Length: 70
Image (tube, rainbow, N blue to C red; front, top):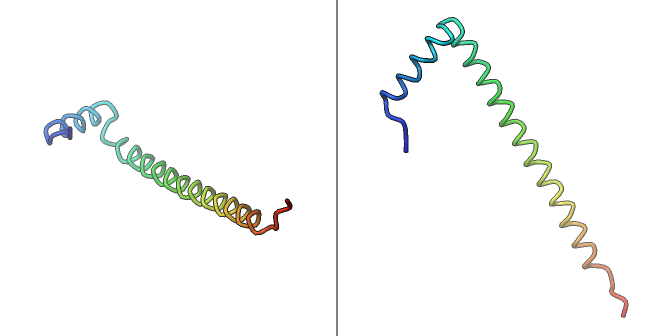
């Protein structure tokens, strides 16, 4: 269920009343920075996971390539 236009406007009005018009740009910048940091962390985490998966695949392939003693 998505919020309607009136619901969004009411929330914006309440935020403006609580924080004041001067604080809203600061809050928006902080939210933008934190969102950027979160995305950066996700990319780094995904890259680390992919690197680890490649290491495991390589180790498994090397293990399969070894001659087996009977």
